[in-house]
Image (cartoon, rainbow, N blue to C red; front, side, top):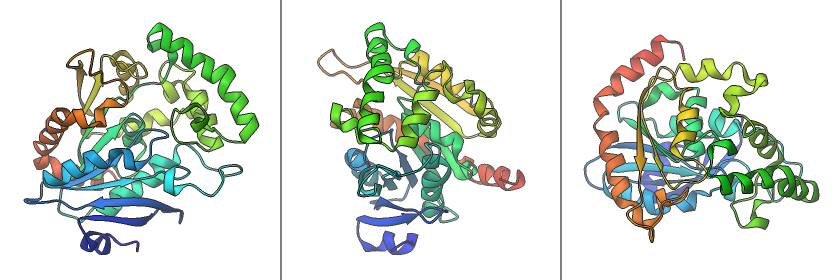
Length: 307
């Protein structure tokens, strides 16, 4: 099954195979909206995080009237081959191909398309060849990845990972076996190489001399965006977010710094999508819907711009 209509008609929660433009098949799930339809929403997850982590959020958003699409990027979760050793891909494929396919799939031509990003999901918006289809975007925990933006202890741990621990694991396994450390899903070698290189720069791949064209791609994004980061997010504190989102030079940007309700309930880098985060979800979903009237304008400008 690889058509939007067949997946949407199966049930309220429909797993299916999503095909990218290069033929790669991705494990995806569509959560059908309940009640009055508010819009179609693509859940763009974080690096090394399977789609099942976002299931609770997707179910909640569906009860609020959103058709929600989640997916495992190629090389991750149910979209991974039997072994990652020898599996070739670029980190950019997740945005250029996988999430681009998700946007095209959920596009019915009339319903607004919204973007919910987590960490890498905030990077991916600028990689989309079809970002003109997005009405509005709300992203949690997006940062530049550079250890220098992190709290001192976390920066030490991250530098140790990149310089000592992960190179040994990659040499041993042939890919980034992150699960050995209990830190996330295993990642293909190409993702490891790209991620390591870009995290060495204060502004991520915008500072990479081999990526000179990337700034122009991001400058084309004109989608209204909120980038919300927890003040206790050690991997992507607000200062790291601010360093990255400078790349969205033409977008309508808002930033939000989130404080945990108490020390007993930290947000960190993953708490945005835990059960305790429903208040954050309500704020994000309400903000997205408030931009529904921008849909026609975004589509017209994207068409006229030849994207």
